[in-house]
Image (tube, rainbow, N blue to C red; front, top):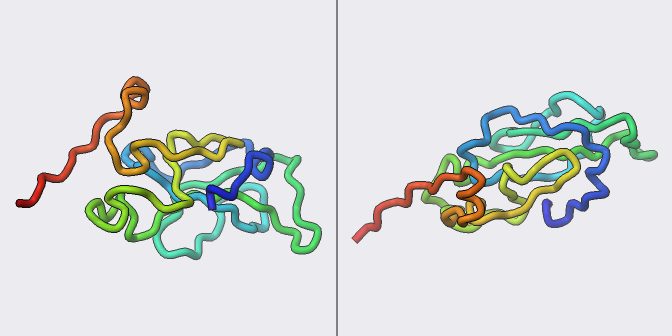
Length: 139
């Protein structure tokens, strides 16, 4: 889970590879998976889809017991806000979710007003974020 990822666990990252455009994604889920390689697209076994992954540099050490590497994967589930905007996460976000614009190699990312379902703050607007259309109230 993102709240459990520490900077030292991802310090060997050299690149984040995005498999899709993150412009319209308010958040992505992130986790550390045990993978057999430092590089390349990992196999994805969760429901939903793989959105991105980290590439590790040569300084990354494999586990002595399993020979695997802990690599960050970025993903979304079928009920996440990008596909179900009025669903469970119309506001708020899963604990392991962060704003994809805050992620970089070796940087775990963080939640923002946008990732939590609210309008972007003035600071985010200054960085180029645009307000999302809010659904019309039912009444």
